[in-house]
Image: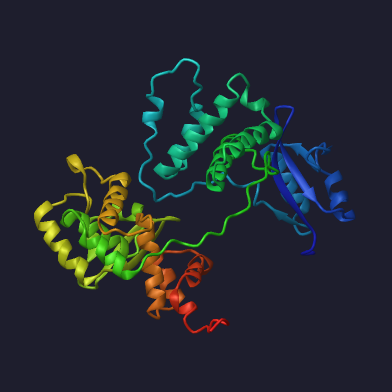
Length: 375
């Protein structure tokens, strides 16, 4: 097989019929093989050949090109489960909402797909919120009639409101999820432009400021929360999912289960934090989760944010401090103390070393040996 010859398969919707799109670079062999497919037609708008989307036709494509041309299924075979380790997704409250006159709710098929794919709860809420914003912008239109120009007009409206790039990307993701995942048309809005990726440095505070914030906690529970955010480099969502059994005092580790990317990992446990955690456990006696709210329910993300901000204000820290600032500070302080990036990557649970490398841009030891030309 000539490795330089390849075709890519896409889902297309043409005249309300599902089609298999076949994209390729001009090549005599490929063109000859395509002529042998059942009823191939050319789409000017998509710039590719297409045939009816049936299992039989998919088998014919495979048998026709097998041994001659490489078939790229990456954009075609996308309907697979994601985040299979997530907790059960509860979308019932979306379904139980009372109808509001003139307001268009998210289609049931959209909710069902989020449920079946077991997207994280935060992702579900984000997608539903943005998609409802979109469909209410075009509340008099059938969704199948909305094309790329309509989506661009909606996104342009958001741009004029000076929303962040992250906000804009979330809106695009929510819209594309409906057309590409729910309806099975992965390339329909492939040409929608995304904002250029921002490259912002993480906000980091000094170790002295971190310790001052922890010292200004209201109680032992709040103190332990901030000690784990900083001393173990936890994400807020990871902290909230911790259970008492995840604190391994013998090995001085914290076990993080089902983190971002559905990965488990171990991270550091501070001796100082362990001492306070034991006091906290004796006083509060949490049952299921290490940190619980009223009625034994999981502590809320908003509560954790309020705890950190209140303590930072008491400590008179000039920077705006969030739970993630404590995580950034954990990584930066480790790098400054001589811990190599690979180990920090493991502790943080980063899938790529490139994500961890950003801390080299804020670590003091990156700059301290460079002599300033003014001096």
